[in-house]
Length: 265
Length: 300
Image (cartoon, rainbow over all chains, first blue to last red; front, side):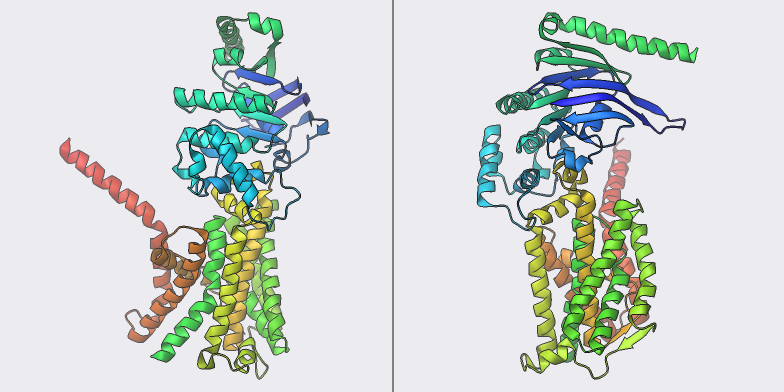
């Protein structure tokens, strides 16, 4: 489904702020894969997501999505097949527009054949109401209210719905429950797995929660310094305990620290 | 008295399309579009020149098209070439000065002598009597306002609104924000130019300096209107632009008649009103914070 070949990205090249965020990274995801990604801050997880979503173009390498080469496709064109959620629940919705208007914007991804001068139709509204009901938050009765009135959890649930209302080929979840309280985080996570399973969406999810990284999905990646340093699935993954993963995580971090020390000494 | 009232309404409605344009650019798209001054004169110049050549109705459409082109240039500069949006407007505006002179045959003004204007044509139909000028302008403005309200409810209109509300979300919805900004600025400047075209044909002349400071006056109208009508839905925003424009001309007439403020100072007063109105939320916040600090100081 997703094939990344040898991508590299350096920010601010040639300046003191030069930062090599991705170093020849390769990755292949099969259809329906649910992959969790762990790694310390600055390991390049979000940069990888930005590269896939098209927020910038990579310096080297190729990105293929479902057979199509998207390496040089701008972000708004990739968004037809890629849904994305951020840690900040405010990023995915327009606060001064109503729930219904937000959903119809997200639904634009499907309507390539519809005129830009057409209005939201009755069928669309019925579909939005039906999907909102599935969230179980009572939002279907507040469709005319501006999204700015919703709580962070409600907004994240709405963003999840918006990202998946047109089934994406790939869903990128960038620590999308990290800013929520534990109960709300659990609710969003349950909705996520439910929607992902229902439509068999290929999914990449960044998390800092080691037990989540192993319990969710079918494959786990660990990133450090712009590389993938651990890629486990199947039997090996089942055998790995949370403590083991945490241990490996610390080892990686320590190694980086040691490298820094060598540089600094 | 009635005459003053009539003129006030006429001017208010003729200029109403400017706050309406600013509602689109400043409120909906969240872009301060400084092309406005230039595109107003552009509309006026094109309209008067074409009417003097005997095409008063085509003049209105030509003026709108030219205004849209001016908006397109500003949008192009800021979306494709990375010029900061305010600077893009100023650059286009500066360039338009020459274009406007050219549109008036390399002269700083143009006049319609005895040729027909849309107003004389409408009056000859015998509708509205002495109110026919106001009636015609009101019909045109009402049609435009209705079209804008309709447009803001369409899929494209929704993406325009999202551009000013959360630009990331627009590209996440498969729409290029550069496209929505371009469409928005084209429409806004077409409206401004139409206003210039109406004013020009009504006073039968165009002047190169007629647009100076009109963006600030337009903002004043919009803010006055929003104070009177309260901010809310899109329809309310469109309405407040029109109400604000009439209210502004009303204030203008009162000032002119009573001389509370010397008429030479009106632009300064307008600028102060706009600056205060836009700064008000921040001022209020600061005052409230200072009160809290003082209160905490007394208690502690």
